[in-house]
Image 1 (cartoon, rainbow, N blue to C red):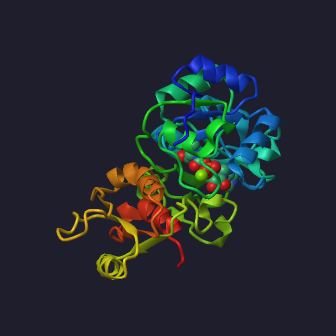
Image 2: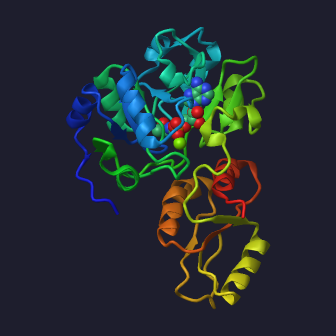
Amino acid sequence: MFDNNNITTNIDIALAALRAGDLVAFPTETVYGLGADANNPIAIKRVFQVKGRPIDHPLIVHLAAADQLSAWARNIPTAAFALAEQFWPGPLTLILLKQPHVSPLITGGQDTVGVRIPAHPLTLELLRRFESGIVGPSANKYGRVSPTSAQHVADDLGNEVEVILDGGYCAVGIESTIVDLTGNDPMIMRIGAINAAQISAVLSKDVQINFGPHAIRTPGSHVSHYAPNTPVQLLNSSEFFAAINTYVEQKINFSAISLHARPQNLDQNIFWQQMSSKPDEYAHDLYAALRAHDFLQNKIILIEQPPNATNWLAVLDRLSRANTKL
Ligand code: TXA
Ligand code: MG
């Protein structure tokens, strides 16, 4: 574990750092963000450097209130206001046409910008006092598991980030739902705690989820994202229990993430984690679980696949990306 003395709960320190062009990791209800002043290109460039993220992958602009929307986006459709009204502050990112001043560094050179109002009291206060946008990808190294605590951020980024604002454990635990409103029809680009049915209900129309290849500009849609260093094997229940028998027989070191209780006869040295059977509780614990299992440096992290049902979509999506093609 990285011992980091940049962790603080003091908003004044975070605010001063942002104004000085430093990086500030901030808590949200989804995951921690790696924040920088959205009007400071030098600070934004450092976000990419520290994260190790390709420069053409766009960043979300975090705002304090919906009345700031028109400062960042133009030709805003009524659908955006309807969704904002219903879900902000909350785990929803809207892709809209950008205002001309929005830096191409933020948008990956595209004509669109991603915006969201996060539901975390500390960060909302920080945003209000900052009186502008804060860009922030998840505060992990590129391709790795997102952080859901200040310590996770410290473990990943150490002193490369000047300030880590500690807002406790993230309530949701997986990244926001992203809805692209720049096309003819709204399109979900990443599924999070807010599901397609909830968005459809507000917009009174069907909303598609894009898992396809032209989601390529969203790095979260690359295969093997959100992945621990240890190879992950995601298997349905019967394959999962069969694999356990095989690995025990072959003396292959593994740990297991399951929906079931630990088998009674299993060697006590094998780390077994029983997850909640409720998708939102599972999502809440998922990234901390992946990090804990990764820490053991076993040969394999075995994961029992949750049910193939709509309410598990967001969790299944993250698990399938963590899965290693062995
Ligand atoms: O919950 C979240 O969304 C967290 C917290 C910190 O807000 N942020 C987060 O950021 O997950 P990041 O950068 O790890 O993922 C944001 C995704 C990326 O896949 C990015 O490519 C996509 O949003 N994105 C941002 N702006 C976009 C744009 N203009 N067009 C298409 N995709 C965009
Ligand atoms: Mg991310």
